[in-house]
Length: 198
Image 1 (cartoon, rainbow, N blue to C red):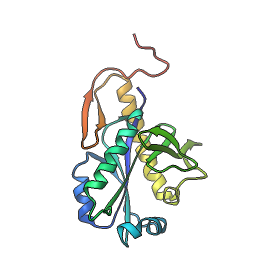
Image 2: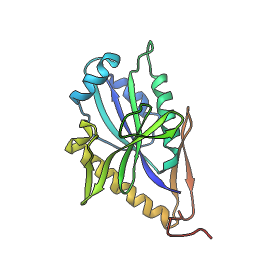
Image 3: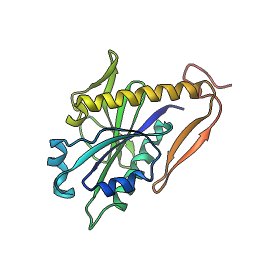
Image 4: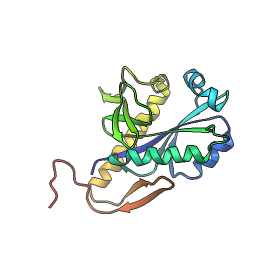
């Protein structure tokens, strides 16, 4: 089982909408609030002016193969918070592991690969020389030094939780359905590639 730390990037305009959405989550870390020119240009026609963005990590770990259901869950949440067919919140789910930050998308473009069910994945960071490094296609907001530092902290937390899981302690596994984000608790050892199951 390949595990990762679930993360979300959330664009919003109204603070009460963000608060309502966050109430449904088991938050671990939340970044400072950002205002990036790039998101204003791309999203303001649908969502209005003065957009803000925040990055979030969730408590627990997820299976990497659940990225599809994580994205479908996020799309359902966007519909629930829509008004007159326009989104009031944009939710981009993804994960952090030892080597990458990966985002999911419903849109096809050059740096993305298809996972299934209309969902694509795109690597935004690669961990080399002791830190996350942006790639050629990495979004401008993910290039911001404060954002990169936030995800460095998320990666460190993930490594601690992964170590706990591999040593047989209880760990929290986050799963997703289209309507529900829920948690289960696992016990027992997580078997890595180098450790064949008995």
